[in-house]
Length: 223
Ligand SMILES: [Zn+2]
Image 1 (cartoon, rainbow, N blue to C red):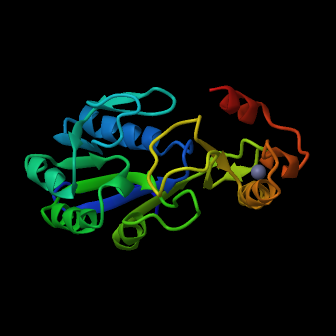
Image 2: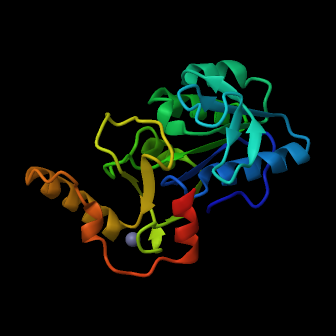
């Protein structure tokens, strides 16, 4: 099941929302938290301090929905500030490290509703800890899909357009785009080949399938 149809206050549960970048994870997180606020539940919202792309004191979706949040450095900070809350929202869970799993367990055991959004895969398509572990222990899982910027198919991969940095490089459309499996693989194969020949301009686009882009994909590209 993806989302609780009704919540039982005091029972405790973990909900996980995962997908690639631009798949609407944060939007879905904000939607659930707003509903809890409207129902007059005590809500605490957290995001990692590393992610200050839009604001330091708010979670902001790519579609510019926003909700005030507390910036934290690690999972222990979440535990420290969540005692009064009935509902806890956490964005970009993949940046809070392995301790987040135990913290979410503790909070759920205290009877709280915990909702975590994050990337399920890194830019190489590898499971992005601790999201896989959270998926395993969650009661409710939602996988969100973006739209492939190349062909318009449903996309579950985050493609890094530049070759620099390690696993964590915080950025937006200048660095990342959503791609389907096929276009992701084509792009990854094209890059090293172009570089090894010493071409001044690597052209990953050359390997892209000739498929007409959908209007949604075009709109996304210009953002
Ligand atoms: Zn594609």
